[in-house]
Length: 161
Image (cartoon, rainbow, N blue to C red; front, side, top):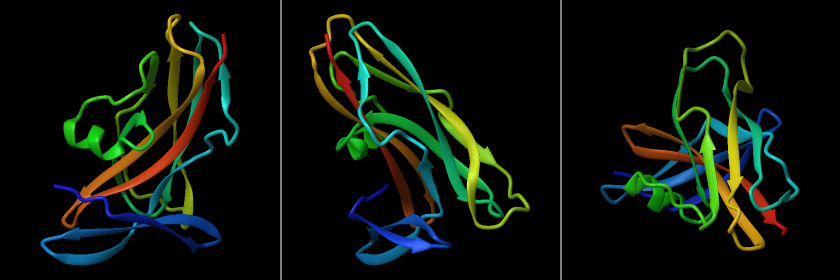
């Protein structure tokens, strides 16, 4: 079971680290998330119909802690539905696939938030897709005894001719 109530961003070690507030069994918990998606492009990715692009991104977390995550891509705003149904929720004509669907890394010796691994996001535009702007989300999720913790990274794809 997971409940996504809201996401707050807080500063830690000079980097922005998302914090999620979740509710479970009528108890409000304030749980810090120690992982995030890094290095996705800020600007829209301009793509033509029939084109495929590979976009690398990093999985960031505390280096001294083990990391066990699930990774998926979905349409922005549909993260909860996609995770609950375990089905892709992508705009018609757009495909988004991550090169790794899980990440299991042992604790390391480096301290602080570091890049733990690089994962590729492959975005494909169907030749029959409609021109327009599509908002995608890369989702990192981790289950623990309090529920499911989530961190998002966003990508905008602009399809032109």
